[in-house]
Length: 495
Image (tube, rainbow, N blue to C red; front, side, top):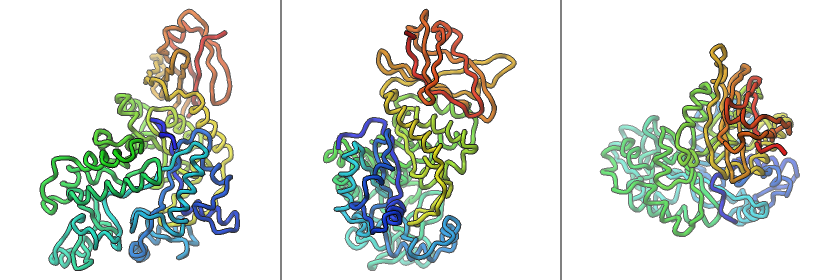
């Protein structure tokens, strides 16, 4: 597989759910080595650079037992899938017993066949890594006890929800600094030199099987976060931060491996500096869902190199479905144009293109049937194709401002930016991020258009406009957009 592009487009697929639906369609047992060509084609539309097969590692029987005894989890299962039965519940993919491809999915041989199928399409493969914890029945507890946060018998008696006994020792259950311990996982010690070496070995082994890795809750092992979570129990922090110690060791073996950090708490820049290629842009997600265009625009004023290291998304397996949160559908389309045309990596979630609305707990291996929105699928496929074929994101990005009039400030609802790709590649994106019509003028950053006519081709609907270049570079292009409307223009001198 060739190296992934600097700003990859990633499609997340819930592996077990996807394989079960293929089984139902074909009537045959299906592992990763048995996936038919048309099923690969469905999850690799033009414009997708990598598929993230979420949840391929061996899950924990003990973690599953704990989950099934949790009434709140069981209620969440039946809320998403009212007829959920025991055969539909596999345990959490983030309660990893071993970093071995689960035998029920076809094992390592099946994953290698899957990677080859993706490679033939020019698409890379991403897998998961969970740096903060492992399952309570992981062989690591017996083989690598120095890699864990330990407790005492007194701790266990005083707080059994936070500690467990295994192999004659007491271990802390996994947690983050803001919530109670998770009952189904055991806490790794990010300050342990043995754990850092083991993590590098595990990631290197994962790198033998794929082109990149998405690290779950990647901020938790960072020195300052880990110290705040565990305090004196883990002693002083090492001089070098966790990822700064681990990632260079992995890259010596896999120099082109892509690292994506699930990140929160405004730690994206710190994780980029510690070696991650991309970190989740949760702040943009929140602003697109809950704030106005001004808040989104303020977020986009950050330096371009920082933004190129972000991963933009409208949903993933942890978040509600975009079709359920971004209503009406025109708003979902507007947000998709924003995500697809900004600097940085982009993440799309299988089912997002067709308008699925049910948020499925990751424990489940089956989801309810939902009607596909063929118009929404065509829109997303067109959007990804337009962005890929134009190669706009290979160029230089610039945030632009829209201006209005004293009696009309609807221009504040317009989000707009340009891409300049080489001598002839000029692209202008404008989106009305509001539920009311908006008007404004947008001055373009291309002085070479002054004095000539310019043709603006909307790449999404094929409509062409001719405007004076002097108007575009002077007072600016006049735009009048309906609620949640937008344009993705290719701009060039008119012939």
